[in-house]
Image (cartoon, rainbow over all chains, first blue to last red; front, side, top):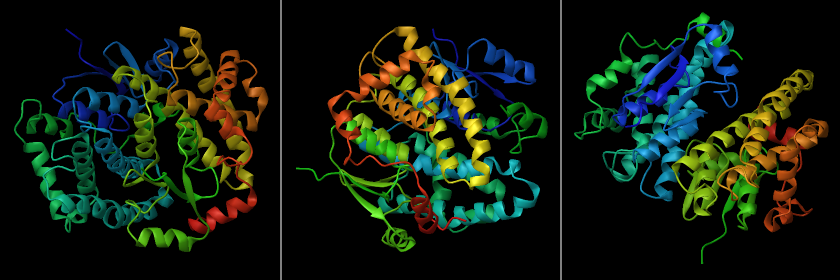
Length: 225
Length: 223
């Protein structure tokens, strides 16, 4: 029996969090080896585990995969969360890359210089309500289905729901005018099915044991190459 | 018969160039509509063609696709340049994301103010020489095959060779200590579709110059 995937990262969301969500949504239990000192990171670099000297790295199915998209694509395909054909995949990819762009902005807000922070928050809110959320609301409206693509749960729903939680953390009022997005948030997590996450698993990710949204200074120092 | 894919971007490399390379390598002819002014971008935005108000956008097989990775993944899968199974794809994805990181550095360098470029260039060259090229040379050495993944042509070879041409433009000496990469570059360049793309008069775009940079700043309203 294959070992559980093993995640190598800091004790923070960063670029590993989407991977945690996707594994959880796929019903896959995983282990985490947290990087807690500069020495931990050095060791990983020195033993040749990191192709480009960077984390995230995930040990899965005999591979030491780096690059979050490589990891996410593999997990999605393996667990049938990547659409039924290349056209569905194209839509999924288009949507999730938009999600990734906004998550990137939100996730790295703590790294913004103090004097630029207000402007950045304004930009994030503007992009959220004028660019990204309308685009996804429009998709759901266009077909009236419960899921973004192919009338079936895919990674697109999982990544989007993750984003909606972050948007809510920034400012819950941002979601006010997007009724279909609020519904998908509920549906995706509540759907019956053996491999779909229970509330507990997802809220385990959101709970206190897992890192808060902010990347604390000592961790961000570790993360610098 | 399906229409040719149509690429919407400015007349320069930017984020569209890997798409041009991949289509060319796959032997797919395509059309291009160039944005010349911010009004052209406005028009595309207003007629709902751009899901996130951004280019690149490619009309292909009845879809208006945005986001380079969505476009590239579709083309690669359609033309069998994405490996034979999920494990080969994982390797391809890992390698090409490394290439993409370096491309991103190059992109930001090319639009940086002149006084910041020297420092960025030093940092880029360091990563090229000490991180990325060694990683790819090691892959080729590990299996001794002619292609990066699966002993046959894939998008990994195309994206990597495109990068090697960029590296060569920046500083040919950077490639000096990487014989397997040099050999890969030569081999891939000799494939008929790639060879054609490397000829003058092909859709391949030159490096950013001042005129192009000024146009880009106006189109995207950058400072």
